[in-house]
Every structure is written in C-alpha cells, then in structure tokens.
Length: 181
Image (tube, helix red, strand yellow):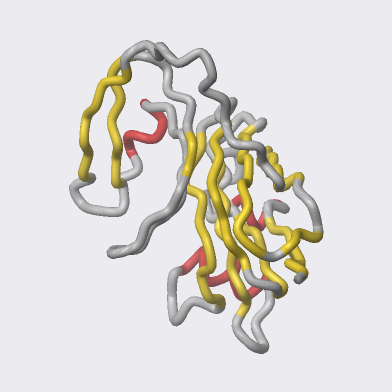
C-alpha cells in the first residue's frame, strides 16, 4: 500500500482514531489533490480540488513547538509544556519522514521498540500517544497536540532507504522528551 509514496507529495497530518477528530493546517497549492489512507488494502482515497485563494490573510497558526525532521535526527525541544498547543512539523531531509510519540511500557527500552519495529512480533513495547504521518522532503504542516505531563519518545518508524533493513529510529531518529506541567 505504500507504493504511491514515491510518486506523490506527502503532507503529513495527524493520525485519527475512528470516532475522534484532530486539528491540522496545510498550505495547499491550487490544483488537484487526493486524501489517501495507505493503512487499508487497497488504499482508500478521496480526490478534491483546491481553487486559488481569495483570502489575503491565510497564515498558518503560530506554533509553540517546532519539529525539524531530517536524516538521522529530530531537531526539537527536549522539554515541552503540557497542554494543547500548535506544533510545526518540517521535513528538511532528503527522504520521507514521520513522527510517532510513544510512552515506553514498564521495563522496556528504545532497543525493544527498535526490535519490535523491525519484526512486528509480539505486543508493542509502548503506548501510542500521537502520530504525525509521512511527510515528503521540503514539506511543512501544522497540528494541534495536547500532551499531558510525562516522559515520551519521539520515533520515526519508516525504513531508512539508504540502509536496507534499518529503520530511521535505529539510525538516530529517536529522541526522549519531557512534557512538564
């Protein structure tokens, strides 16, 4: 289902569970677009068209947290305040990137998460908290996240296209962050 990724521009966006909603902001260029769900087989999609904007003031929301994704690292604060706030996500790398925010299960480590991501065997060694979907190089998008105080890991689960068999998180795209009250 991921064959279309190399043929399209991925804008990222929040992962939304059934029956829930999320707020995000994207700067679409005028023209034809498609909303694609690659998690289904076959992928589901909805085509839509964006007309030229007549609004003079279509600015993105002011972000409290900025995240830069590039090969082998996340550049973002180590400490973030709890609560709802706008995050700005930018892929400044040469490859596709994504960002999952997880809490490791008791007695589990980053190495356990990397091993699970490589095999998919057994229960997930973490709890999902938030997820920002695949972004193409050069793309910026915004989302509102509401994280309670705690310690989290930020991980890129995608494979590293330059190192067959290794995920981006195994190459350094894993960062521990603290959310404070």
